[in-house]
Length: 92
Length: 210
View 1 (cartoon, each protein chain N blue to C red):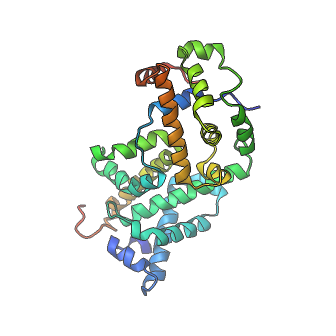
View 2 (view 1 turned 30 degrees about the vertical axis):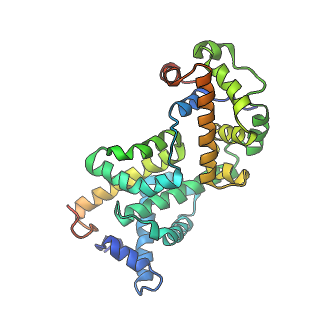
């Protein structure tokens, strides 16, 4: 027998629902840039609002983005330790 | 020296991934090493159930297929890592389904057929939500298609979207639209019953986790 539906979780999703939303592929197209912005600036610009909204209603993208953020942080640690793999003209 | 430690610009990565490039094998090998390292580092123990080489090879194929979509708003390697993580997580989710560690989709199908039509919310739920849960259940019954009920319930049960999409004979983006349309319908139905954004926010903010 299954548990009763989680009404609260569904109501949370409804509360976070927007008239226009980006889908998972559209989010993935922006994820790398957002992860680097978060690493470099610690916050996201206003035009990232649709991507952030997507994360509140898509647990899978949220899980993947959190992992990407950790990967980006770890790579940054590597880069600062040996100063490699930056693009030409990219600030240290 | 680790080959991926060489400095390589985004343009060099992209040029090297071109099938005509004489650097193609080396660039693919370097990217495979880099992706494998990132996946091991981030997923750690969770990777033990997967064949890392398979995940990396699948990732490389996807990256090669979609490299024209790289927009340059991040380093190429970060963009490639995002794709590899999606491949890895999708395989981890598929595996959970195959190993029976999730509610079977057929059980969700059976449950969805009656969802909203029978089995009233528990009295405590009605009281705690001031009727919101009861209105939601009625909205599910009256506003959603059978397909939308299945999709929403399957997602609530935590089934991976790749599994839901496959079982519904669609793709993940079409599934997202199906569920988004369902959420909008439910919101509208609740608003018509007097439960607007404030009521939703109040309940979500105050209700204890169950």
